[in-house]
Amino acid sequence: MQKNIVLVRGGGDVASGTIQKLHRSGFKVLILEIENPTSIRRKVSFSEAIYDQNIVVENIKASYAENLDEIYRCWNKCEIPVAVDPYVNYIRLLKPEIVVDGILAKKNLGTNMNMAPITVALGPGFEAGKDVNAVVETNRGHNLGRLIFNGKAADNTGVPGVIGGYSKERVIYSPYSGIINNIRDIGDIVEAGETIAHVENFKIKASISGVLRGLIRDKTKVGKGFKIADVDPRISERKNCFTISDKARNIGGGVLEAVMYLKNIKNL
Image 1 (cartoon, rainbow, N blue to C red):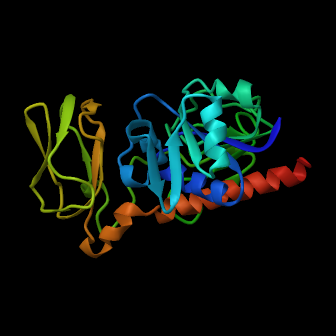
Image 2: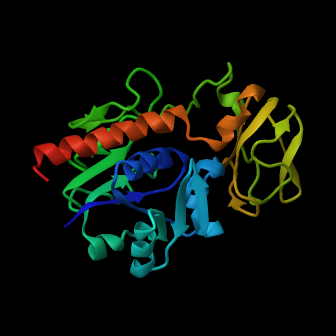
Image 3: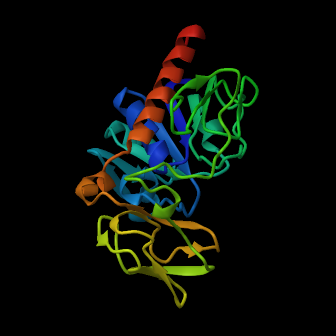
């Protein structure tokens, strides 16, 4: 076991709040991603390093790493390495002290307590004490960020959080399958009914007026019903497109607390 090495499965916007907290607290974080991540809030998702070689989120740089040498090179430069490793093969090579599942797939894609002395998972799909050591609640509300050491997080409601009085209305799902071609970009001001992208020959229109807070990467292959965009009705909050959300920070604080608590009780 190598102390203070954390493998985080997933580098989307919510997981990136956790990654920021752990990195700034002195842990050596390695992000494990799939070959083609599909983050919506791409400007604050460390997973984008897979495509662009590197990304900076709130003054923290993450860089794509193809092998162990490049991973250690990133750590030596105080950067966060991002590797394509959906089957977590780097666990065998690095023997980390901590594994965090931040995929938020609403189901367990293989994370278990045998992976590391400390295992933490975000949201539903895991049972604390059986699958992992701790689960962090991701459902908005009074219990957001709460640690669960026995049992499960709340079930996924399927209802987006309310922003500016809008919930389901602000999230856009593709009504068709195909390749998306973006017309607008994250941070743009859009009007309700305005075309923001095409999926094949079909127009994708903004559901409400506001700021385009999230938009899936151009040329991504999407399926019918796939989440592709997110509009924030608060035009004055445009800067939020480029910073980690309150939800992600809250969850990240919960993960950091879980890690430190478990290190203490396990005498690591």
